[in-house]
Image (tube, rainbow, N blue to C red; front, side, top):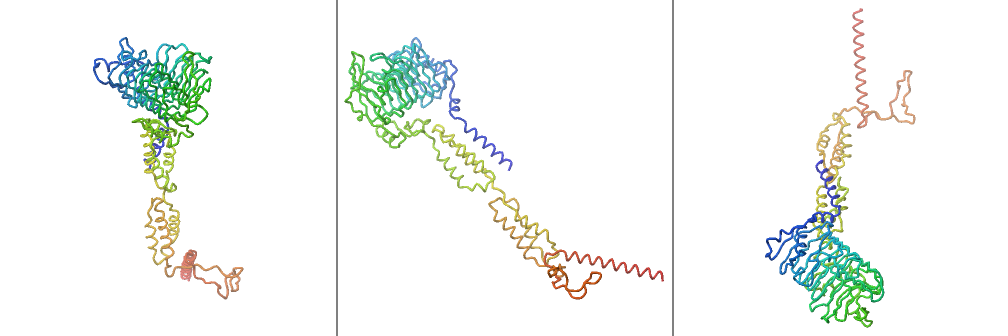
Length: 592
């Protein structure tokens, strides 16, 4: 019993621990950066086709190698990130921060994050490109997650483009990447929640951003410099034949001070200065309307595009705001105006309920090969690979709760442990935290297994035994049935055997009721009849009854123990009288 009680206390304690925020544990499990760089994984292995980064210091070493006087650009090589990394708020220098659109200066290999998370990237510099990568050219960046990135560019910053993942992507492929955090820029440049600027044949597929973007560049007059801001990409310039933005989403926020800025939910604007084929934007979705601008008319939910671009199968919030604007550019004046004859309905449709399963179905109908949309924890669309944004499977928890609810809690002495396990269930866990959810289910199952039945109620048994013990067995012809019924009582049964316990009590009662008096057992007179209780005879002077008998019977009733006591008293008095008479007789003989 004590062991089970201690088990219950321990279980409750573990359940309380389970309520602690799991993101803290996730970051603690990541390899934390100490601010130093380790390049030993590369040195001496320059000809290796691939490299595996296993520490935060090695990731910093990757940046160092690409930014040295003779930069290593990893052409044709693949770098794998094998662990979650916490950059710990130390100042980060972007990979290939000063590169151009060439393989000689920009990262030109493949960086595969393998779905791992890079926490707390912090970058701020007036002279450097910012983000995880500064520039990439003919590169592939995939399966990378940034969590809580902080990018800050002040008014003295002199770079053209700013993004959390990449500042400038040239003829590169970016797929299955995601960023959250804050991007704050005070200059009139190209600002994107994920990528600052894309050029040529860059393809961005299956990416999302939940970044809070703040542009503080001030208001101005028509023709004055102004930033171009997009939730995913700031600007796309001189799109190549294979350029593409497909299956991307934004659900952060955008705040722009300038009244001359272009502000868009997916990407700010695209321009083709050399008559390039034009950009294709397909199957993208804006999941927020939290976008403000110095001039609200400059806001578009998807993008502002030139006449060469194609926008199709996109989705945006209901409302009067323009989703897609086709720009008529006056290069001489340096201004662009919306084409009043453009019909944005050819680009997609507005949505009133982003949690609708129908929206996910439509997204999957037109998804790029390899992209699968699903419903996220908050009910809005996310990608199937985003385990940290998808709800965990609670089927085992639900089954355990159903099992608990089928029990009659009144039967158990410690059902409160089950209640505690159920109340400890956190319904906000993600698929990445599935093990914790399964542990919740197991905790309920363990609590059920540790249940103890309440003890049966022996009150009726104890009362029957007390009644039997008050009887004198010698007064009955056979008292053995009562003794057998009493000795048959089994103690320590639980409440599930209550009927058996009640049957024990009844057996004792039945045995008592069946008792027969032994012959000659003294009986007690009945109470005399008559209203005043007097006898029917006349009283003598000494108070004895004279003449007549009591009208009531003198036979004692069963269970009346005063008659035997009276008989014993009379016998004792008679013996004392006889002894006195004998003594008196002897005295007379001696005196005679």
